Length: 380
Image (spheres, helix red, strand yellow):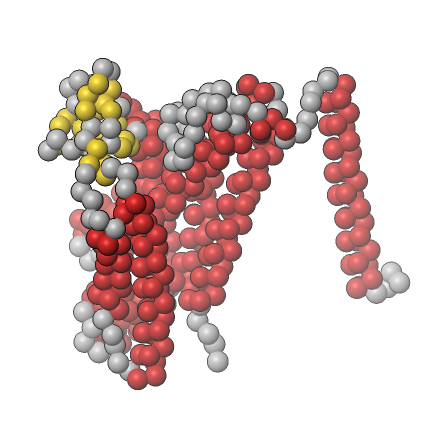
């Protein structure tokens, strides 16, 4: 039996699995024994109890009388919001900076290189403190807020701006926008298949833009085309009405986006350099403009190199959003800390955090792996 390499491999794996299970059993039993000895209650029943604390920023309805579970949901929505927006802006900025590093314009190339070097070598936490300090120290107080056209007020409390009054038409707009995006995606796939069959190129960009913008506009018009707006007004020590982008949210979003963009820029630059130079020369011989060469020839081939390391940067951004607690943004970690202080359920709160961040990371990985399979080169 031991002379067989396959048998030895199975034996070693079985021993390793037994060791891991034994270690896990020891840790769990030891933890439960210590908790029982100290009369510490365990379980997730606390999630149904009244939270009793206010949350400054909330993307869903929440009241202090709601449960801890509802509070965790608010923190999760805040975390997902800043992570999703951060991924979008970091991708856009990073792609532009990465292309800028390869520009023939000396000033643009050096500026892009300086941006990358500075952002990559300054800790993210320090950058968050800098952005937060800029918003809270350099902007005027509430009573001296900068008035932009009567609809936007900029102060140390953030950016308070006018917002449409609640109406069924505005509720339908996000769904119409999603439907327009899905329709544009389907049309783009169909147009590609048609181009392969017939060689005819359709105006995909214009039609997609019409779908994405036109459907929400039609939904808004069909349901009454409301124009009433909530205008911010000064009341006491702060503004009332409208919506606000707080200094904490702005500092976190800008910090995450600009920091991660520096790493994405290097990923994009490496992907472009990995494309054979002859591809660009062939595109030039066909008469394509520099923009067309980049969009139609270089970037599609560079994606096979860009996507895998880009996935790691998206994962890092999602996990780095937990630094929000340092500048007072009520993300999932901040809610968990408050919950632990009030209930003493530290193990359960940390388990929730681990489960949520694990789920987010796995979902990002699954999506990026799916996209990587779609754009990879198929060898015959």
